[in-house]
Structure formats: C-alpha cells, structure tokens
Length: 114
Length: 116
Image (cartoon, rainbow over all chains, first blue to last red; front, side, top):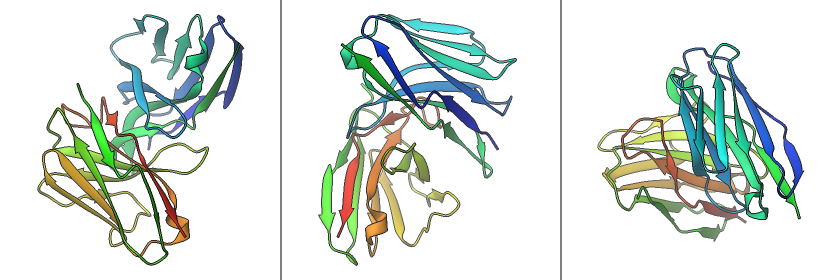
C-alpha cells in the first residue's frame, strides 16, 4: 500500500522568509496530492492540491511542486506571516488495505517567528 | 461553498455511555463521508467511509460494533461511540467531497470527545 513521509516535523522561520515542507510517496499510481492546514483545535483546511499531470501549481503565496519520477512533492510558502503558523499535512491518494483513500503524512508544525 | 459542520464541538461523557456525533454537508450533497480520529500531535487516521444508503466501510482495527455509522441522507452522517471508555477520548473529524470519492475532501471543525 501507499506510504507517505513528511519532513520536517517542525519548521521555524522568520516572518517574511519562505518555508518549504517536503513529502515523499511510495506508490507510483498515486495521482492526487493535497495539502491541508490545521490550526489548533480545528479541522484541516484544504489549501492547495495538485494532480499528477501537472508539475507545479500556485495560489498567491502558496505553491506546490510535484516530481513524479522521484515521487516527491513539496509545499512552498513565501513571505510568511504569523497567521501561517499551524500544522500542515500532505496526503496522497492511494490504496491502503485494498481501500482507495487519502494516505496522510505525519504533519509539520510551522512556527513563524515575529 | 463546500462547508461541512459537526455537532457537538465538544462533549464530555462518563465511561460506559454512548455519544453521537453528527456531520452535515451544508451546501452540497455527499454520497460519501469520511470519519477520522486524531490523537494529540498525531496525523489523521481514517476510521471508516460512510456511504449513503448502505453500510459503512471500516478500516482495519476499527470495531464496527463500537463505532456505529449511519448515513441516512445525502447531507447527514452520524458516528456513535458506544460504551465509551477513556481510551476513546480523541478528536473526531468528518469530511466530504462534493464530487464524491476521496479527492478534494472538505473537513468539519471536529468534535473533541473526553470520556471520564
């Protein structure tokens, strides 16, 4: 089944700098890769996603890149702001125990230092 | 658009009692909803996939008799934790996709369950 690894587990950056979070996946058949932001005590919020027929996608300060050959994808946040502080999860669509589902990374706690 | 609500947001119950959590899609119909559990500082763990009008599909290790799921309409799925015990204390989150399937899931705000 699919396995998703996410790094780093914690990332601290100065306000205004860029932040990059990386994920790798194991199943080459996976074709959908979302990123979610979760604030403390709340449900995850979809911030950007990418499909396997695209190499990069941008939405204002957020971008996601996908390298299908290497089986990794990354989240890039530019000009970070205090409100970007949260836990970020990557995921990949794939099979787990014969069920098609989203397979989740372990999460990255992003801390924006003022 | 694509708003999912949950009720209650927080519940405290005594050990041995049952607790029902509701998940509603407010502005779309959802033939499929997903129930997750999240322990502190951990990732999301899929418990089951809720299918409107049919039985839920449970993940390995999740007891279907303990976590009862009912998806009675296209906008409502319920999760009932039966005979709750302290180890069931967790953050329960539902999600749904307006287009169906596992992609583009929109999550509810979550329900914090504390079993005393």
